[in-house]
Length: 130
Ligand SMILES: CCCCCCCCCCCCCCCC(=O)SCCNC(=O)CCNC(=O)[C@H](O)C(C)(C)COP(=O)(O)OP(=O)(O)OC[C@H]1O[C@@H](n2cnc3c(N)ncnc32)[C@H](O)[C@@H]1OP(=O)(O)O
Image (cartoon, rainbow, N blue to C red; front, side, top):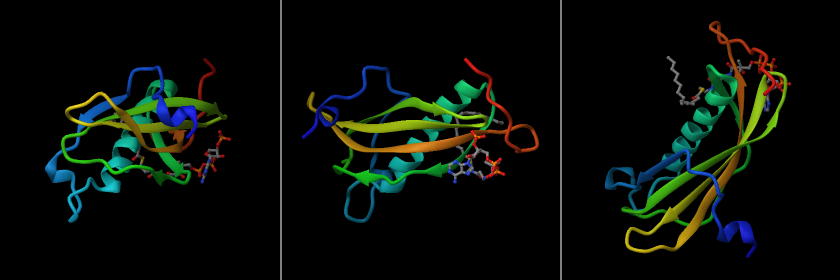
């Protein structure tokens, strides 16, 4: 097991929430789609701050689910901009779970989202350099 599976990022999470019974699949575990939606939201939040305006998801790279999320888990979504192009940017999102009554934290999934800064007509617009 590599170190990055054992330790979450140092930054504050973009989103931290509790997995609820309404978020489960028929087997009682949390839906993968619930995680994906939160990851998109977290990446969108990071993108919106970076591009100082609207941004749209244009692509998501492969996502593997490493560990199930259970009802009552605290789930934290961390996001980092890893590359910036002319109008697009790539954001790495990691999701980590903590059991309700414990301190152990486990990586659940990770993925790289590509967002495009868009204008009022929903067309790509250049991203300001930092
Ligand atoms: C009232 C408002 C409140 C706001 C409150 C904000 C709150 C904040 C938190 C909320 C956050 C929510 C976050 C949810 C975000 C969605 O849910 S968005 C909805 C889902 N996404 C969509 O509907 C997008 C649909 N796609 C499109 O409209 C068009 O593809 C786009 C995005 C406008 C791009 O148009 P295009 O003609 O493909 O653009 P093109 O010039 O070819 O390429 C532009 C850039 O994208 C890159 N690109 C294009 N396709 C790809 C691809 N497949 N892979 C990688 N890169 C690509 C290009 O390489 C290029 O990059 P740069 O070299 O310029 O850096």
